[in-house]
Amino acid sequence: MSTPRKVHIKSYGCQMNVYDAQRMVDTLAPEGFVETQNPDDADLVILNTCHIREKASEKVYSELGRLRVVKDEAARNGRAMNIAVAGCVAQAEGEEIIRRAPTVDIVVGPQSYHHLPQLLARARSDGRAIETEFPIEDKFASLPQPKATAIRARGISSFVTVQEGCDKFCTFCVVPYTRGMEVSRPVARIIDDITRLADNGVREITLIGQNVNAYHGEGPDGATWSLGQLLHRVATIPGVARLRYSTSHPRDVDDALIEAHRDIPAVMPFVHLPVQSGSDRILAAMNRKHTAADYRRVIDRFRHAREDIAFSSDFIVGFPTESEEDFAATLALVAQIGYAGAYSFKYSPRPGTPAADMRETVTTTTMDHRLARLQDLIDSQQAAFNAAAIGKTVDVLFERPARNPGQIVGRTAYLQPAHVMASPDIVGQVLPVSIQSLERYSLIGALAVPAQPPQTHTSNSLASTGA
Ligand code: 5AD
Ligand code: SF4
Image 1: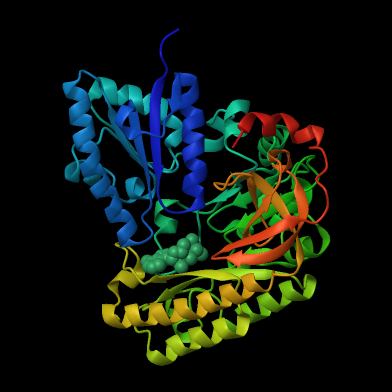
Image 2 (image 1 turned 180 degrees about the horizontal axis):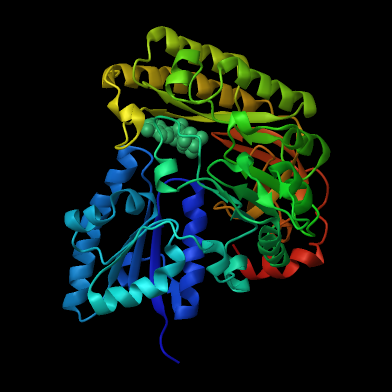
């Protein structure tokens, strides 16, 4: 048998890149590739890049500088190494990448990575291969299913792409240009993928998409299904204990989605619902297509359906023309909603987006100051949310042994890490935990009831992951 070739993938940015990286490994597995954590001994290194903010983009070029040295060293030792740039920087910058970093052999956009084996062959014969088209064919239909061993090694929680791209065209955002227009996968394909994951020990599924609640895939009945309908169907797959979805747009929250939270116990009461700003003037300039009041109403509808629901969000500070008054409206919205956590970013002009041409920009100093104030408020809300768990008994899905010997770590419904002393047998089970204390962001507790023997459904995987 020939020795396997090794691929190392470094992913930046969002959860879809994490998912895509796994699918790249699946695509390369039939070619004899195995994954390595070490770029130095890899035959192929893939940087799966993010273009959302300037900082994320620039990281790629500094990493390519480091990789050039590794590649040259490998060549001196008579070993060929290929370097590929995938993801949204590849899509946005294409050949420009090779001009800036001639060490790169392959540039492949997010809609073309199922062609990696052919691109690799082309790079070997022609010295270089670039593909950044949006092919008409369905990338997912061409991707091989992951091997059972790969699924088991990846743990009990898995992302599954159900929708890709976005038609919203927020004025600051590159996604519609790098990921393309909104496309939903057919229900049957999604169900096949998730059934295979669940059969191999996965207990938690997060349905992902740039605008996941715009999902409108073809159902098995030929009708167009919404995300709410899809959640109902996925919840019936044996072994699926928890369901999440991300990222949602406030405008696309329909009654079916709200009802899914009310009616399906597996759907977790934790929703990531970016608002970006609390000022209607800025929301309009961002082309968000909703006001702060619309957003508050959506939050109220969720809360009405399920009172233990909690929210996280994304915010941009310093969007062009943002005044102190606009920013105060953002702080007021955060104070009013009360988040379990949130991400906040300084506005970063992205080439080709409408906002990049807006002239009345906010100074870096002001942005820094506003970001710090917003993050202080969000941190205090998150700390209060976590502290409120102390003394309560909450369900935890256990994921893996923790670093501290004897401890097992899992997550609550709100994705808070929770640690208990217990046997590794509990990995893959959802068990009630009485929370005793909080250490930074982690909850510390004890099993509230003795653990059950693992279910037959998941026992194999859990023994074999040893994660
Ligand atoms: N500048 C700063 N933050 C941005 N985001 C998207 N585009 C930009 C940009 N140009 C943030 C938004 C989005 C998250 C994924 O990244 O908050 O929800
Ligand atoms: Fe970008 Fe989200 Fe706006 Fe789509 S809805 S353009 S992904 S910020």
